[in-house]
Image 1 (cartoon, rainbow over the protein chains, first blue to last red):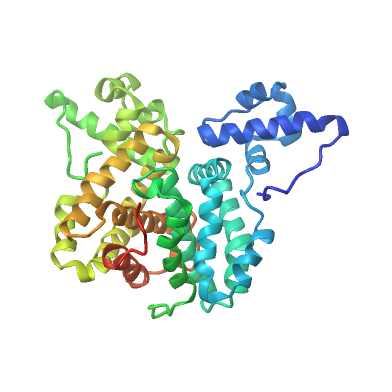
Image 2 (image 1 turned 30 degrees about the vertical axis):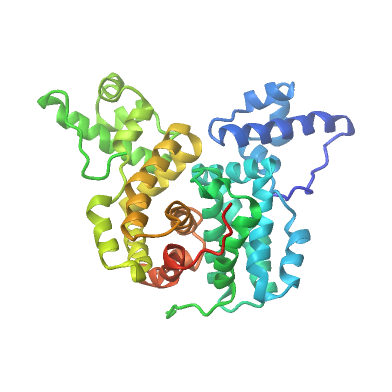
Length: 204
Length: 204
């Protein structure tokens, strides 16, 4: 799962238009219908190409998903600002990064597509877990110098993913309709606790 | 979505064995494969009946899902104990109820099936939202006498669903392997804050 700037180059210069059209049609399809209901055939049709060309470029639906659905922000560009402000207020900055991204329509569609795929398809689940661990959570808790970094990373992931599902999939009100800064004020302090407060856990 | 004790009666006495077999096959199929990949045909085959009998009893895959996948505990039986202990320690008791349920294999399969279906199918999403709001979250925040009950319900839902996804779908370690009481100690205080601490939110 590359981030949004992770582009692959086409195999031949002349291919790039079709490949781009396929990628965009796939992104819309996966975002709207989910992994299982999005077919190579439908993506090809929306992109105005032959299904065989989709397979020529991407090999399989799994590969197409992996190449077309990208995390809606570039962690290597966005995380330093979360980390550099220091550990004592990182929760609010982390909340803001996720909430603002997901409140933008494209970011919301992407996270829903990623979660949907992760719940129905093992490869997408592994891909999302690895991406979260190595690109977002790992650098975050390491950069902030957290003790028990993996456990804190898991708690942070639970809070952020739960928030995304509650606001953008289940759409529980009033949480779903709050604006971004209100949500940041609500969940920022809870994220802060997961990042820096003593953990009440007697670890084995 | 009935809870586990919500049984429907068969149309004729002689049907109950087949209907029960279909329901159990459907529960296994939805839990293992998710909503989209579970077919009427496969459920019928596993139950040892004709697909037409599945449709005769349930009408559609949507109806079959709604009737076979049940919330893994009966809220009207379990929530009073969470509420009656009083608001000041309800977070830990609520965490225990969910964590223990989801740690049992059947409870885990059920929540994964419900979340999977909610992410791929609008009716399942509405069904899960309505069930959470009216059967679990509403009675909980009302019973505890919370201010801003709907908003607190949303925060609690985000925490619990995020925890379930992180532990049972993405399986982030070490969170996924902690035993139930360790998880209760970790997330109970955070749930407590969502239930009873002042909300830092200037509501419009």
